[in-house]
Image 1 (cartoon, rainbow over the protein chains, first blue to last red):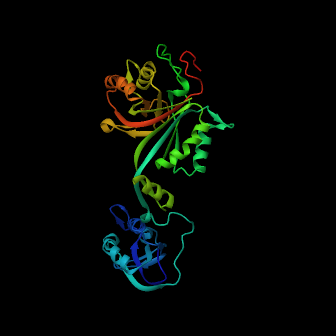
Image 2: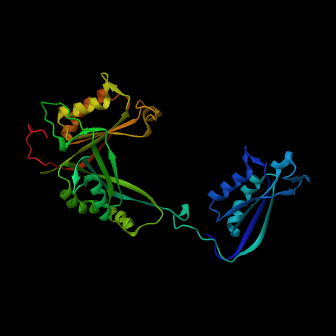
Image 3: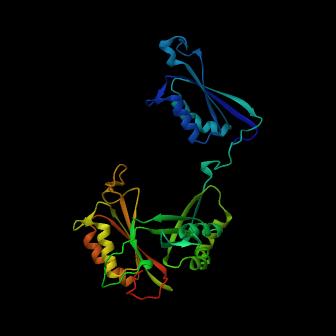
Length: 245
Length: 118
C-alpha cells in the first residue's frame, strides 16, 4: 500500500497491436503489475498519435486503427519500481517507458474491507485433532436436521471449522446389523461432519455432542494442520500453539 | 448408550466404475463390512480427483456414468479392521487405502439387542 509522500510515476507507451508471446502486451504488463502487488495501474487508449516509426496512427484511418497508442500508468515507491523495471523493459518491447518523481497526497483505499494483500497471509502449523461424526441425514434435533444443528452449535462454540459430507451409501451404529444376517439395510442418507480444532476445544464440545446425538459414531484422530489465513485470529494461533506444547 | 473404544479408520479410495464380480466395488466392500459386523462404513462420492495411474476421475455431467472418485470410510477396532484387510487386498485392484488410529465413541439409542433391527 502506498503511503503519502515521495513516489515514482511510471508511464509506458505502447501500440495497441503490440504483442508479447502472442498476447496483447498491455494485458501481459497489467497482469505482471497486478501479481507483483503494484498499488494500482491504468491503461488509457489514445485516439491518435505517432511514435518512433513516425507513422501517424489515428482512429479515423480504418486500416491502422489497431495501432492506436496505449498508455499504462502506475505509481509506486522507488524501490518497487526499480525491482520491476528490468522485466517491464522486456515486456514493453519497442515501447517507451518514462518515469517521473511525484508526490502522493492521498493514497487510494481499497473499496471493500477484505483480504488486503495476498502476500500478507499467514501460515499456521501445529498439531490438532479431527473429529468426525457419522449420522443419518434424517436425524433431527429440536425440529431441525441434526447435522445442521451441530454445525450451528459448533459455530456458536467457536470450533474452528466444520464440513458436512453426504455419503451415497452406508450403514453404522445407528443401523445395527447382525452378523448372521448380512442383509444390507443400506442407507442412502449417511452424513459425516468433519471438524478440526485443538484437542481441548473439541473435547470441550463433546458434552454438547452427547446431548444432541442419540445415535451415531464420533471418531477422533490426530492431525497436523497447516492453515492459511489472512488474519491470525489470536484464538487459533493460541490453539495451534497450545496443541503443540 | 455410550461406548468408547480405540480403533482404526480406513479410507479406501478407488473409482466408481471399479467392479468386483460384476458388482460395484463399493457395494461389495460394504457387504463384506456388514458380514464382519464392522461398526461404521460410509461411501462418499467425490466430484473430481485423480489417483492411481494419474487418471482423472470426474463424475459425469450428463449422465450418472462418469467414473467419479469414491472414498469409503470404515471404522472399527483394530481386530475387526484386521479381518477386513485381506478382503481389501483381494478386491481393490487399483486404489489407495489410508489407515489411521482413532478414538471412537459410539452412541446407540436402543439397548444392544442384535435381533432388533430398527
